[in-house]
Image: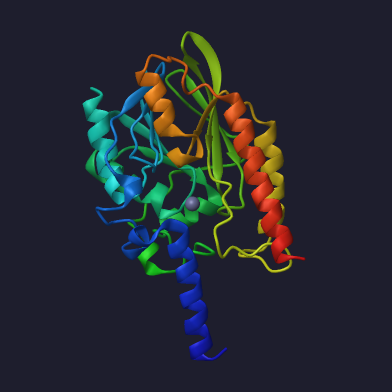
Length: 296
Ligand SMILES: [Zn+2]
């Protein structure tokens, strides 16, 4: 491959990535103040002991246990700062964060973890899948698609590697890791029981099932085995209980509309098994259409 071809292919990969994440985010790996996805958002209670502490779209969840706090995802770096402030605003001490979890290694979910750990919770243990953990440990380097340094971030070293079906427990809470790869090689969906509006429900924090523009499926793949990974993950997602539908992006589950309904008095606004089912049906149809499109 000539240097020119390689430069052009690189530019194509970058513009695909820029398109996928939005130009503003891609310019500085999500560090720009005007990224609409990382604007400050008021933290709020979803269920007993479960709080939203993320930004306008990049999500972060706080679980309050009697033995300390659990945080799932840090958003991008600016979101990470907000997560720390949001935990304080709710009246909890960020130094009590004992466990950090991650849905996937992309900067918009993992860059904030370093902020949370450095600013507030140096002793928090980071639990992550082997494949995504290796990429977070390298600050985004090694992602099979986002190879531009603009997507790199401050690394976080994993403390505990989670396998499919592993449980993470603290202070009476237990979260189960489901390794659901495809969007990233070690994408992890988390499930746990939570009481909402007086009833115990099953919460699901969806990793991501998005086929990014530029991903290669079928005969040629972004990473070897990606198509089979997506197939297996859709089967897993459709089999998981999902009463309280949560995800790595607020837009996946209509976070702002549900928050508005909650504010209007609908205590179980985040209980949405039908919405979860519909989301997965749509995501799987989009995956199959793209697979067919690339492999006529
Ligand atoms: Zn992603």
